[in-house]
Image (cartoon, rainbow, N blue to C red; front, side, top):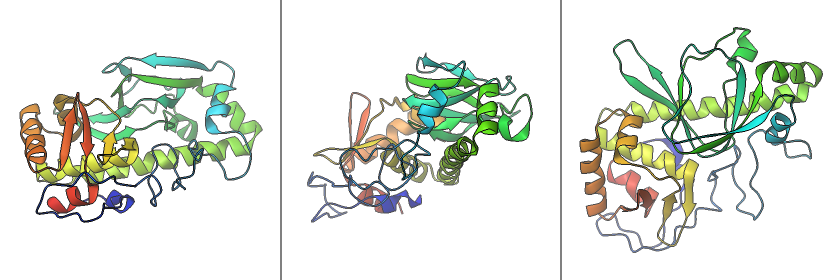
Length: 271
């Protein structure tokens, strides 16, 4: 299982052999749980921080990108492509709302997810480090409806040259993206599809989870087909496996939103 299991705290009197008692899972203040920050959440109100935000006062990465010449806000509908592999690397993207899926397409036609980016994730910046006109190794697609702040790569490069702290913010944002990729790769190494699905659900709980009276609700509307595409499965298989999890009292699905009653119990169920 992915190490994100450590982010969760099981509710009292849980029993893996019985149906969850629907006790509230207080994960908002536990170590490592945050939808928005790249650093562990304190659980304090107003503690949400953008990726790259330093502990000291200073501009956030979002503020830096929005302030660059030629920057703008773009909205992309779910399922639409942001860029294809090989496209010119002309702009840098910072995700403001929603989720973006990055995938690699191989000659066989197989498409493998390498990252599922959350709010405040930075992508499309490798050309700034490699000096190449195109670093589009990935297919970037809107996993949900997304809103992004984008800026010309030339403006970003100029800002780095003028202020080294901007480069540091970008590197911090890029390092977070790399960690997300490593987590997704770890998820996809599970040969057993049920374990792969559980790992993916735990990643979604960590990055998109919202505490509720029932447990952790994944704040994305996910079709079975979208989940299947993300983890290299089929819609029929995902429908069956989610049905098993629901029958075992581990998850609830309501209008394409998945609630995990107890992530620790979910992880142990298939460990």
